[in-house]
Image (tube, rainbow, N blue to C red):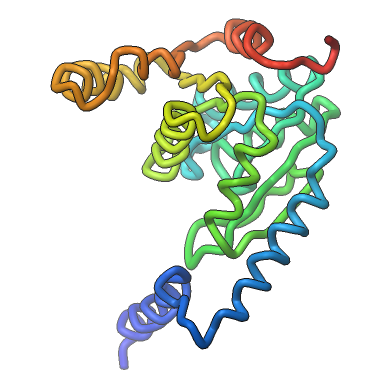
Length: 233
């Protein structure tokens, strides 16, 4: 058997283990206790982080990227204004945000997820949690966030973006700033939302007001302070 074939078979086996929702069966209801345990550990670990912002973005962004450096700068600014920083705990933008927060002397939370590829915890989280279940991790992102900062990223970043907008739109969570960073990067998506979703009445014009698009760290901070409880207030 060739090495490539072995790798493909191993990858398929590992991928199958990740299909956790498909794995729910009546005779395996004991798994609920593992889920409860993961919830309890997460809440117990980060319940007192104080006002925080969740920062999302690509795990593939390199340290020499302008977006990496911008994420560092934004995170450091948040910490200097008494906000903790929460990320997915991996590389790229997540690493940059955790690094910026940690080096500024603040709380730097990494909510890492067990995946068959890519997700290796970065070294800059002052508080680390390891999740098996995506949906529990998602709850932690939104439960403790005073704002969502969406840096350039891929499908995972888009997932967090649209989930937050949907939760706010449907009044499942209190309104919070959802700030997309990088006008040039996100312009095509915003135009598509206007030209397709809103024009064809699959979304309301007011729904787009949930999202703010900006580039400057000070502008981002001002928008967050304007719309959220702040530690100094």
